Each structure stands twice: as structure tokens, then as C-alpha cells.
Length: 455
Image 1 (cartoon, rainbow, N blue to C red):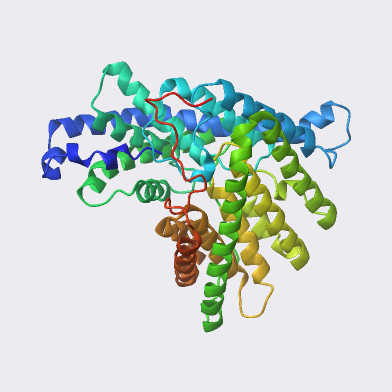
Image 2 (cartoon, rainbow, N blue to C red; image 1 turned 90 degrees about the vertical axis):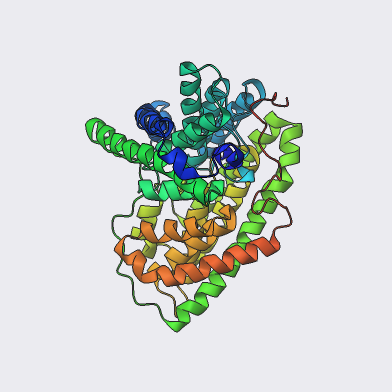
């Protein structure tokens, strides 16, 4: 996700209101509105393609090959093929398939247009074949890259400030409806980019404009195609109870537990990265087989679906909450363990975003703890999502919003609990993290678009 706009504050006039009232800023708003349409349509198409490929590969393909249903071992060849595609894309296409997800959300400038095919292919191979990562990071990269590339078509050598700001606008549009609300996506981008003060308003206004237009495009295309909007939503949220003193105690426990789990996941990804970089193809295939084995082992031991462990967890959150009573405490323990390990392994070798897997691991952990006295289901679910998101993303305000807005009206009831769990998780994670890049895994930034990606 581009934050070049935040880094180029020296190019902004001393009085930002001067720019805000200028004709140049009105032109920027017009460009934001125009760019929001194609970028959001592209994002919708990408998510629709992922949504069609997942059941095609996991359900339709084995039936076409003559199997009655999906064999329990099917994730093994599926993840192996996906790993080969990811490794070859990273090795041979420009841009290395985008930034390594273990480093958190990308904070670099917009990717060159030549990198975009590799980013899209690596993400498709990751998301559609079952690796445990989400679509948000590729969407941010694609949105910013397309927007900045469109600007270069109009003006060969645009100012860096304009290119960065419109790249940010493209990111706003790309994730406008992914989290269920264009406002939540915008808040995520602002906090991740570190925008504050006068610069906040300058980037926020065109970004919100593009985000609002993008949300309308998502709704329109979803209605026209019948595919839906691919937004993160929960349909049947149980009624939340007023927080109790015991639940505030549980907020402390969940916050610390999430910080420890996040540290373990980051450690696993960090330990795998050197091996992946040295022998990209064979090690990535091995990691894909490990993810598949974790899913198969979980399914065989619990009688649940392998999809609980595979994929990002974005579409699985709703049915998981609705049918949480069907999961025993032992099944939930195994789910948290297997999903967390698969998440760390995927961070080490694949390409995608870190948000949705962290939310699902946190949700499963919160539901598990709700089996203990003094903690309600909704409270545990919400605190788990918020605390784990804070542990993995290092974005406390966004983590609170992710957990509470997702629950709708019930989220307001448990928000005080979520805030405590998020703050505890955030502070504990910062204490446990040795890398100067607060919650990143690799400790390295993505290759600069101006440079040549290493082999």
C-alpha cells in the first residue's frame, strides 16, 4: 500500500489549505473520481475470479476427474501446484509477485505496471489453491499500480507527490468494500501509511471519494452479475450481553495470548524465509504440502472441513460463528493450532495479505475461550479478532474497528472489551518483537520500483 504521499510532505505547501482551495486540488479530486471506477471494477473482477476458482479447483475438478466428492487428500496436489505457480511467478516475472506478506502491509511507492501481472498471478495461485493468506495486499498493490500507471499515460513524468497520492487513491478504491465498509478500508490505509496532521486531510478527501465510488461499483457489479460484493459480513450475530468484570479480566488474558500467538507465527515465517529465498521452488512446494497436511490432519481428527484451515478465512468467519456450537473445545484447540501454523508457513512462502487469517485465528481462539466460565461467545469472538489483528498488523485503531464494525449493533456493546484486548495485545506484541519494524516478519522492505528485483 503506497505511503509515498506521507513521505513527501516536504513537497506540500506550508499551508495545506492553500492546496485544498487550489484548482490543482480540484483536478486531483476529479482524477480520483475517474480512477475509482476502473480500479474498483478491476478489484471486483479479481475477487470474482478468486471466488470462481476456489470451488472450481476444490470441488468441480476432482468430480471431473471421476471422484465422488472431494477426496480428503486433495489439498496435497492442489497446494503443490499452487506452490509451483507462485514460485515460478516470483522467480521469472518482474516484481517478485509483490512484497513478502511477512513484512506486513506494503508501505512502498506504487508498483510499476510491469510488475502487476506477476502480482496478480502470484496472488491468484496463493488464494485459489488454498494457502492461508488474504486478498487485501495484492488488491492494494494492483490498485495503486493501475492508478499510478494511468497517470503516467496522461503525463509522461508526473510529480512524485501526484503519483503517490493517486496511487493511494487507487488503493482506497481497490479495497473499498472488502471489509464491509468503505470507511473501514479507508481507516486501514490511513493508519498503515502513518498519515497525520495536515497531510491526512489532503490524501483523505480524494481517497474517500474514490472509496465511495468504488463501493458503489462493487454494489452495482455484484447486483448485475449476481455474484455479490465479496464484502466481509456476518449475517446471524448472537445478541451480545453487557460486559462484566470477569470479561474485562478475560480481555487481559486474550490480549496476552494473542501477542504470544502472533510472535510465534512471525517467528515461524521469519525462520522459513532464508530457506525459501535460497531454494524458492522446492521449498515453496514443501511448504504447500505442509499446509495441506495440516488441513488434512485437522479434518481427520475432528470430522470438520479442510477449508477451516485452508484459505484466508474471509468467507469462513460467518458460517464459523453461526455454527460455533458444532465445534468441541478439542476441535477448536486443533483449529487454532493448525490454522496458526498454516498461516505462518504461508507467510513464509506465498503471496497475499495478512489480515483475514489473523482475524480467523483470533476468532477461533476467542470462541475456544468462551467455553470457559465468565466469557460470552460474542465477547470472546470480538476480542479474539481485535487482539490477533493488533498482534499481526500493529494497527490498534483499525483492529478495534475490524472487530466491532463486523458485528454490527452487537459490536457497540462489546467495544470496551475489544479496546482493552487490543491495547494489551498491541503493547505486549511491541515488547515481544525484536525487529525495529514493529510487527513485520522479514525486517526488509519490498524492492524499490526504481530498482531491479533480485533473482
